[in-house]
Length: 128
Image (cartoon, rainbow, N blue to C red; front, side):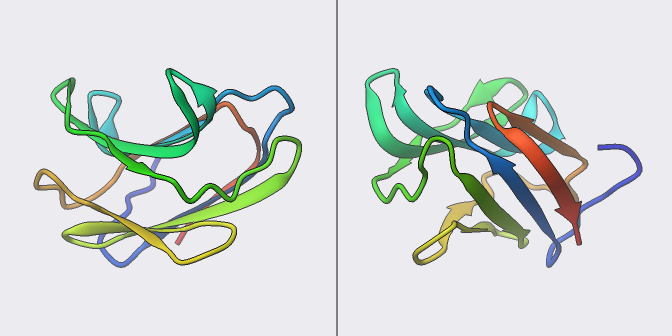
């Protein structure tokens, strides 16, 4: 993400199409690929997890404890939109349906300068 900085109160919106045969897709927000404030990974069938959302963080290349969510509003072959709102102590995640999730900010971070999306056919990423 070039020349964009996300500060508390701002959000990232990701819209894309989930490919058929998808085992998982990943969205990461942080400072760089070694310092990720949220690693958001819906798993259709991967690493023993079926229809679970797995969330984690990484500081200096060390992963934290995974949190798993059983609510799974994703379908292969469908379009989806997810919005992440960055607050000082939490990331709020608005999914395609249902109540929002939250994930704690586990290490001090004042701004997000890194966004990575893998496993989706991305239509757009907006930063506001």
